[in-house]
Length: 151
Image (cartoon, rainbow, N blue to C red; front, side, top):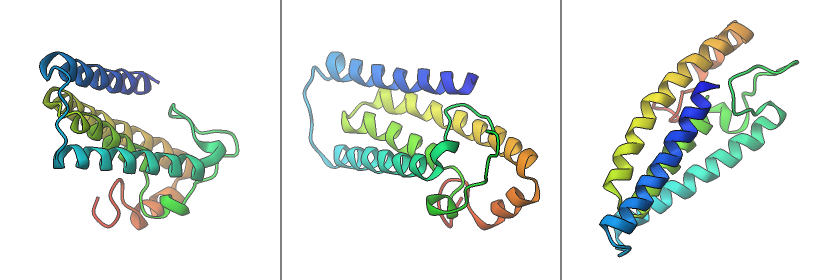
């Protein structure tokens, strides 16, 4: 539960700092360039991945780390290849927002979110191993944490 609130706080901090940078430092002068296009792409891909992951999990999706009654391990759809697509999505759209607005301050703040996500992944995987045992360990061998075929 603590991570959920800290990640939301971090995300809103990124949004606030990005907006502040854009309004106060950049004086609301939008520079359309390659970096902004990359940011928009990351944002849209992140949102798409998050929507797909939430839809695939269905009733098992929660914002907090918990196992629901009669919980089943989801290993199909996007979860066939990566175990934590929602965290990948968060990294992508959180990185994309400051890039859209050319905010170095917001981008640097976003980098602080990434270690928090890796910490939560470790906690979540321990919880899932405890619940599903060898089924989850086997799933770990067949899938990657965040990036298909890489990590």
